[in-house]
Picture 1 (tube, rainbow, N blue to C red):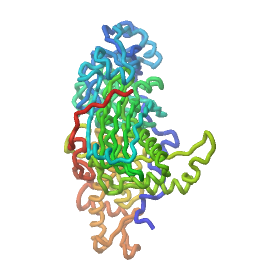
Picture 2 (cartoon, one colour):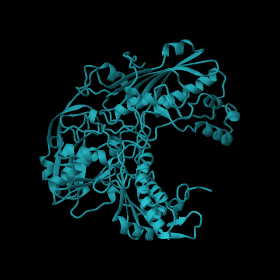
Picture 3 (tube, rainbow, N blue to C red):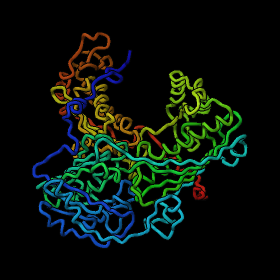
Picture 4 (cartoon, rainbow, N blue to C red):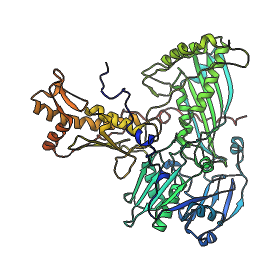
Length: 619
């Protein structure tokens, strides 16, 4: 029998009814009084200087209320403070087809769309860069003048363990090249934002975002408006997967158009625009050299990668590191070297598509593991089990492994598919394959480094026994609102249906850094549990006094606080709340500040020896 009354039970999601009945209000479902509709003019050139943008004809078009251009928002912005290289709308140069150049607000969307064709942009075409090889070699064509070498955005060279000895002692070495084509997000809900600048000179932005806190910061910087006068509300999100975790041009454009007109402005991207804005998975060219013993035990791995980052940085600095740093976490690797290069090209920017940076090398390395198994006449499934990184260990680059369930997963796969018996027995043109992978749960550092909490929570209990949980998380369909309600309910002894969750609102909820890197359950879940346990202590103390029982004999579940030894002795949760409030005042608790739920050291790439060699250009 489970020790939990909520966790692990099949209960309805707390926000399921609104979605099932169609009552959930996504950003594009919002309609405000006097609302204007915006559209974004996008570049038709992959690489060009902007000589002039003439908006006079568009402004004169009947129904058009306002037009903004890059000159109105020249401040550099981006998700990573150290690599901010784009503007909300292009200012002096466009770097990919589809880059936002100007935005129009009109009385209806058709009028706004028609007005786009009236904006005249005078371009001076520049030679574009479209491939990784060109980006590495064409120093005469600079996509960003700040690039130190040709069109290289980031270059990383890290070495761990004795690589030379590892390869020297290997009985067999494979040296393979792989290419991952890259792919795009395609969420059911396209990106959308509604901005309203009120008579109190305060801005509210409802938007389909994964990172309301970081967007909040960038709005202050770009618009020059104090953050105390900006409110970001992350609306229910119809799919994100990383593609809505950057600050986007349409969000800033809607905000500035609303400020200019003092009317609400909505901008919703169409499907074509999503493909320009989405920040999809990087195309990556890879070379992997792996040494093994006769029994398949790995002795050394040298991994080289070249990432096509598109026109701007996005999360690229993290993606570059992730591409190499996380390759070591699945199988035992005693010596490892990683050379990574991310380049600029004149294509839409790539960024944090689910598991960013780890999917591409995992594809290549798993293919190579299969090749090694074939070379050594080993069963690929049993071979993987043999070389798994053990639980509660550290990798060669000092990453901490806690749980490791891949062995159990492989056993379950064998039982359900009979992989080992069927492999190679399915006839010509048919096959069966497998691959293993791992990813981080939680993120060890905030995007801008600080010692503040990664996630905070505030919980309030009212006199009727209602529980309100406030946290800055973004509900993107992954169930974070339900998770917060379930954790609070379990800790307090109520049901999730008794818990109201306020999330993704920068004016109401404590900061959470965003829905990415599988971090929300770990970070926000611990914050909610911490706050809930503080309130539970007050409720149990009040119940213990009323029942004349020691507090350590009381348990809470199903809306009651009851005697562990005699459950017939109990007090209703709501009654305990009244008693506790009578004694302590309003029942509110917050999570205690801490940088992360589990203490962590600096990332491995900041502490180990760095080599100075450069990888060769990919062939």
